Length: 193
Image (cartoon, rainbow, N blue to C red):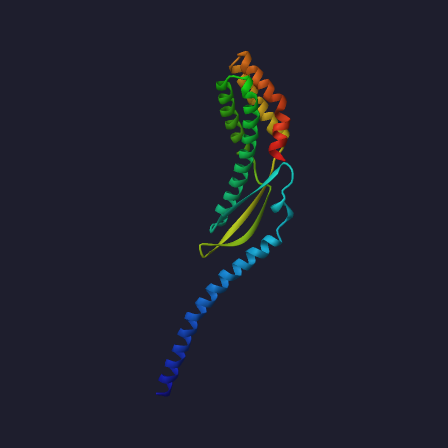
């Protein structure tokens, strides 16, 4: 009888500890991950907040490690593409007053495709990882550091404007492309600063 009583009491203690322990572990993991993420960002390398010239940082979050890394790289590439396309469009819009609207539209489209092609070849040189709670689940926040060579980028765009010139030999179109080429350094400087 004593053994049954002891066995019942021990079973009750084990089961009650197990259920409260799960709750405690779960809360500790989530709260710990939040604390770790906050501390992680405080201790992040300088480039996470200030990447410098001709570089950009993208971030990505996921409960999957590989996906968070891919999202960070995609975010960096998207940012570079947007900045350069915006600067290219602004430059062409300035020249639009002196050019045929169709030439400007075609040039914007072709150069946008070229910019996309060029930025998609960029690779991240460094990643930084922080823990992050995502929807109550332990996840990852990755930061991707992407540097790019402006001279190579300029060379790719000049090759595209040369191709456009060769395809369409109209004087007005050639003048637009020549004018754009002459301003390309300032366009890229604006986009990458």
